Structures are given as C-alpha cells and as structure tokens.
Image 1 (tube, rainbow, N blue to C red):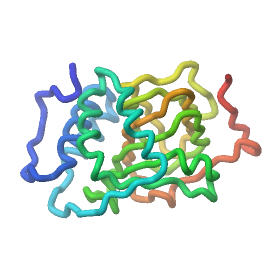
Image 2: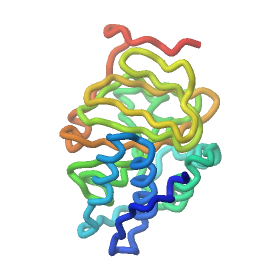
Image 3: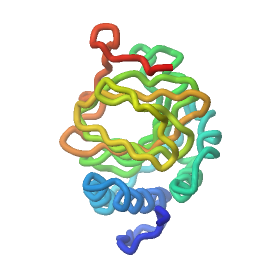
Image 4: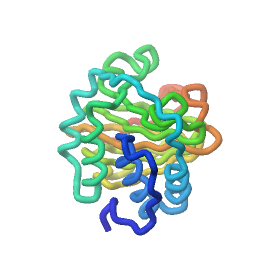
Length: 227
C-alpha cells in the first residue's frame, strides 16, 4: 500500500498550510508501517493545531547541496513523502550542528529542518518532526537524547548504530528506525547522501538540545563501523 493511501485521514481546515501534505502523508505512512509507536505519533500529528502557524524565513546551510541528490535516491515506498518534501524545498529552515561539538567537517555536511516543534513553523510542545540531511562519507557520531525517536529513510542509504552495535546492512529508502529515550545511536553514510524524516515524541521532546548529548567513543567504548 502506498504511503498516501489510507482510509483514516483527518481533514484540516487550513488548506493554505504548505506543510499539510507532508504531515498527512507522514501520519499515514507511520500509522501503517511503524507499529504501536507509529500509531502514537500519527495521532499526535493529526491532532496538531493550525491556529498558531508561524511564518519563518527559509534558511540554507552548506549540507543543503546534498538535498537534490538525496531526493533523487528515493524509492517507490517513499515516493509520496519525497514528493511532499520536494514541494517544500524553498520553505525549509535548515540548521547545522555546532562545529565546536562535532567538528567543522561534520557540521558542514549535516543539516536538519524542523517542521513541527516548539520553535518550528507548526508549533508543538509534544512533538518534533523534521528532516535530517547528511552528506556522503560522513559519520554522525554516537549520541543520545531524552526523547523517543523514529527515523524513516526517504532517500539514499546509511548504516545505523544502536546501543553500541552497528547494523550488518545499510537501511534502504522506506526503512524505519526506532530509538528509545536516551538510547545511543549513530549514522554513517558511504557513497550516497541520506535524507530521513525524524520524529521526537514523549516527555523529552520539548527539551531539545538540553536533553541531547554526544558520546565519546574513546572513553565510552562505542565502536567504529566495520569496513
């Protein structure tokens, strides 16, 4: 079943909201494919208020150069989501990690655009939803945060580390990853860039950066991905 095809769709009154198609498709995709967590997140997305939409200026970062190549590496499973992201291309507010924490090379090759969240265009204190973009041959290091998290690979492929172990194979478009609150995880790309949809929910979602921490592989024993 395609992500956009579902019998359960809650109509929103504000048809002028440019984010609505992506949020509707994301809710349907997660409800159908992401188990119990997907049901919870879909209900949160469908319950978002449109009464306080914010108008914010689009913003770019160096990693945005990888957006079109990542969109081109989608698949049938994510075609509707990729199309909705492409339609928002000129409205996304991209940010990059702090170079002091991750180093300049990683900071220039990773960016995220939050669509739902405390300071995002669609306000919410219970949910964060956005896009993670990562250039090829880049390691986003081991980290954890207070919120529960779902990732959906939209375009490109990446290897994922979780709780100190690396997956044996990369995730293709359409793959879903769930991380528990405070569970360590990492992302590594090789030939392709990565575009993924992320969702934070639960008690830690509002904390944002205050609930986020990087792990030190040298002192905490987190491994590099096997070649």
